[in-house]
Length: 41
Image (tube, rainbow, N blue to C red; front, top):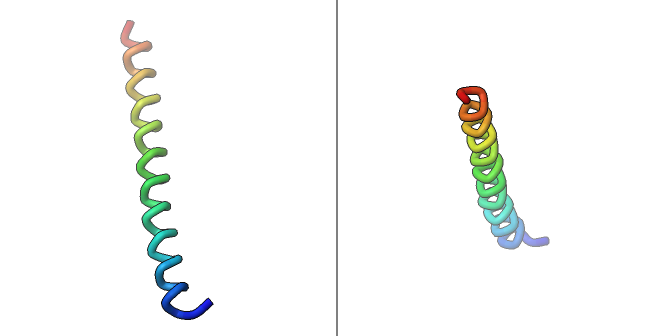
């Protein structure tokens, strides 16, 4: 793998990690909100 390919690979990997992290954060907030609503009833 040459340096250009390595740089491009790392950029794609970093953006993919941000997307996965955002999705995980969304689900954490979603489950937290559902829990708070259910306890409030």
